[in-house]
Length: 119
Image 1: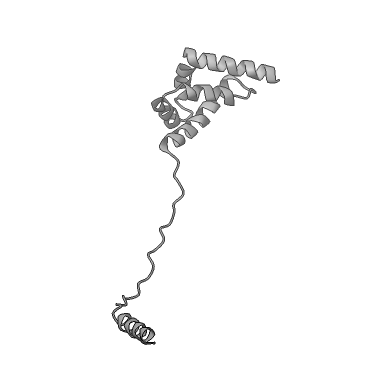
Image 2: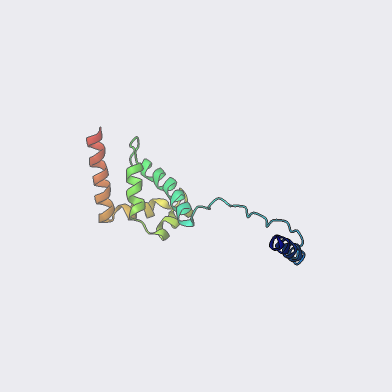
């Protein structure tokens, strides 16, 4: 019978030793920002618009998207940035230069063949 009394007294004595800290507000939850597009993606997107326009001038009425893809795949990032910055005014020579490359020509030929078999 003494043991429960001793344990109760010990528990009461120890409960007075616990230090209560001041209450603090919870840490603010950081706001998650949506990811920004990579600069390369923005350059490619702007260049795609300009290249599509140039290809449409050369191939009126055709679906030029596959040909534009070939030009973009075979251009350097610096070339794409130049095309995107030049807009419609100076892109013609840059696009022609990229189209004249053997790898671009092969890509365009493959895209044209695929378009013929799909039609």
